[in-house]
Length: 275
Image 1 (cartoon, helix red, strand yellow):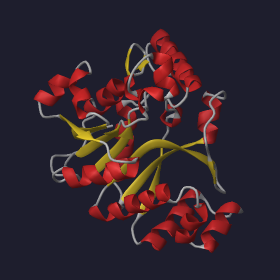
Image 2 (image 1 turned 45 degrees about the vertical axis):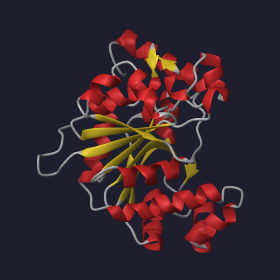
Image 3 (image 1 turned 60 degrees about the horizontal axis):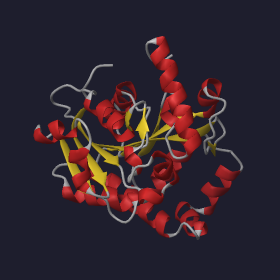
Image 4 (image 1 turned 180 degrees about the horizontal axis):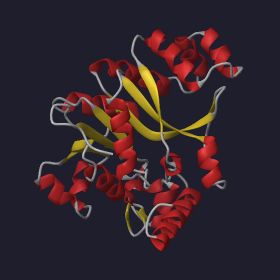
């Protein structure tokens, strides 16, 4: 897949790498102080994410949101990117949504913005190319990367993911989002409200209205239909980018995830690349 033409501009990439510190079970098991430093395939998983972003022609600069921004210079290969002004380290805020809002405020001309996470250890340039090209080729404010359960379970039946169920398919998030216009900031504000109200989910449901909630629970809507209604409700255009990569839905959040990712990487190494 080709990259953007010169007049389209490149995406800024924001990698969310905040964590709970050394008490995280993955940190304890790996003996590291930050989750993003857990080694996957012999290197810190955040290094794999940044390498995938840097290899995509769609990505210009990369912002890395860390609990301690000074950590960036200690990760192998990152100092060169910092010296080239390709990589910038930012401090995390109190939550992921607030970290995104802080990045939007702290970066000059941040749009279009691709958001990824440091635990997306299987992220590939092809995945980055796919969601950026799909987002740039559509008239939208916000895109959400998703992976269908049929694709994921056919390839990795042992993978345990959380799914949202629609009339057409069940989908898992792919930890990839694009914010194409400043209007998309309203969705990040809603995300912040959701984090604040996570113990009172009915308040979030009220934002979308009872009809939409009921239709979702009864699986009367396809994913695209649901997002069209959400777009109308929020006053912005939200769309799903359906990722044709099963690996896009697999992040490293638990020790069993790490084992699965290591198994996938070993298989790819033995076959010469992704199957």
